[in-house]
Amino acid sequence: MTAPGFTLEALDWDSWLETVDVDQATPEQIAVLEKSLPTAKTSPYYLLLVHDVAALGQRSPLFNAVMYGPRGLPRAERELATVAVSRINGCAYCASVHARRFAELTKQPEVMQRLLDEGVDTALDARRRAIVDFSAKLTRAPQRMTAADLAPLRQAGLSDLEILDLIHAASMFAWANRLMQTLGEPVRPAQK
Amino acid sequence: MTDVIDAVAGIAEGSPLAALRAQKPDLVRYTQGSHDVLLAPADPAGVTLAERALIALRIAVLDEHGELAAHYRARLRAVGGDEALVVAAQRGASAAPSPRLAAILGHVDRLTAAPGSATPAHLEALLGVGLGPRDIVTISQLISFVSYQVRLLAGLRLLAEEARA
Figure (tube, each protein chain N blue to C red):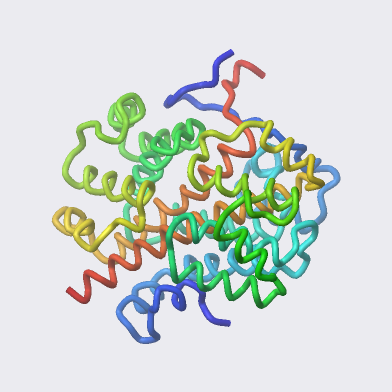
């Protein structure tokens, strides 16, 4: 069976390493899992990461603040940035999760379907184009960026706080993609 | 404790960028917290403090972030890393003083440049030099965190440059 490509359908993720048995987990591990995600105690990804409970204990609240924290960049645009980064890095699992979140928030699954099918250069409106281009540059060549790379975001009306959120969302997926892509792999749910 | 992002990016107390970051205190707090638990954990378990600093330094070198490299080079020396480790961070796996560090640095380079190229065999290689699942998770979190940190610093640099223009 070939690995799943980019899709809006829900995927599962299998760990390449032994995960923590939730029945053997320490109270600290259980507490960190519970504050990470409602379903973390049955997720192979979280049950793997909780091996290093201190690291996950900082990362989960950071991830949640980046993606869901109040004020700043609208949530759908944070999702857009993370899908663009995941599309470039090749993380089909991350792209599927966050493309669906974008589609739920905007009711525009067709935008995500095109981004997944055609890549980050697919046609987008000006504000989304600016967000995707910025995320792409930050993913590929952060040191080669200059203040001129902010100009399209400013023309599209993004405030300082919105840009701060965008920087965090795109950067967070340099992190998330690397974990997902190098500790396991996406699988179609039907395979299980 | 000094905020590493502020220190490396040169964000002064009371500056507009400091005020902007302060509007999102959870982002500041847990970014610093992630740095601290990965570089200076209460329980380093199977990955030494020097190995952690070496890994972080290698990514800063690969991603060409001079100030961040200076930060992690200082950290590596502070936790007892000798000149051989500083050289290994500069040159990569081929200059590593042990098979264990060669395997770790090879993994660092792969995750930094081409995360999509990883396979289960790469993790087998890490298990083969005596690292356990927990250690591999720690190393993966550390590599991924510094990849995040490099980009966060780049984005903040743009805002600072824009404000000066």
